[in-house]
Length: 449
Ligand code: PA5
Image 1 (tube, rainbow, N blue to C red):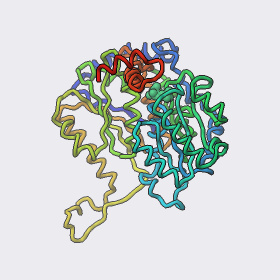
Image 2 (tube, rainbow, N blue to C red):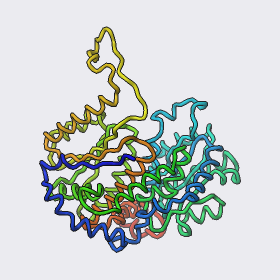
Image 3 (tube, helix red, strand yellow):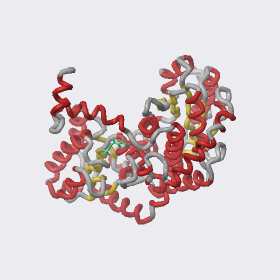
Image 4 (cartoon, rainbow, N blue to C red):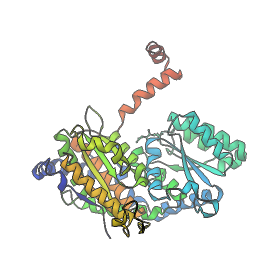
């Protein structure tokens, strides 16, 4: 079976192969501490073995609950923030019809998945409720801690709406809670109200949780094959476990390359892709790398562009702005659907020179041309490619990026599995909102505004 490939030849004008290989010892140590579970944050290494643990019975339990929702709802609202929704959204958006929300009802085979709890916009929620007034829907509320404010607020409002629409008992059958096995307000609520639940394992942090029910359940409701996703992740795990050699192990190669570039002051990494349905995959990657590496005054800043759209905006900066960045292009060899550029006799638009070509061919030429232009402009380029966008290769990509992120964070010298910086805004927000227990902070912060 084809596999994901990493090519770092286009960074070698900027760092030498020796400089990349110079990370081998650190990669070996990091690799072993991931396997032995002896490194920083080793309480949160459950994700390493997830592909092996997704047994047939785990899949069928998820599919059974998903089937109930699929039969009874046109829409699933995933309520969650950060790692509690980005993985599911990344996979669903990558695989779904780009215009699924406009398909006529009789052509739509799967429930639409919409999102809440990932912002605090009043307009967003009111607009969403306006749609839900007229549709059958269900909710999957996801919070590992069970106490995060954004999803808790949105869930309270949505639960209220659902109960008014269906009555309390029927509403409860339309709610699935994904949370800790015993702790947190959401778990208590789920017990009291009798919701179906899935467990977020203790040793898996939010941004590494897409291969748990956090991601798998919404993906299954959306109609995608979670066994193939798990199979892809397992195939990648097998490949990555074989050895830690830079040049052979793709995650080791990527982790070493980006650290070599970082040591040359290239501290912004732009994940580039040419398919708009991978927008949320980039968002997932940004969170994974941003929260894992950005701490202790260190870390590569993860950014993203979708070309060719962004060639007409960010392209100018990338070509000629400050030379502190590098690009990682996520290439897809072939599209899932085909359309050719037709011949036009009058040729008034002068496009006959590419008539008969597929759009994907034109996109690929844009990609190759852009990569060369950016290298000429002083931007090192890593290439990561997959044969096509399907469950199997997305599964490979997920595990590859997770493993590379852990290696890379260890090489950088940080704990890739914590996120202490996320607490600062929460403390201020709670103080401003007057949350009980924050009286002193409330008094102090009010003097500042
Ligand atoms: O990756 C992480 O740990 C975070 O992004 C969390 O997923 C996010 O803060 C949501 O947390 P919770 O699932 O506890 O509501």
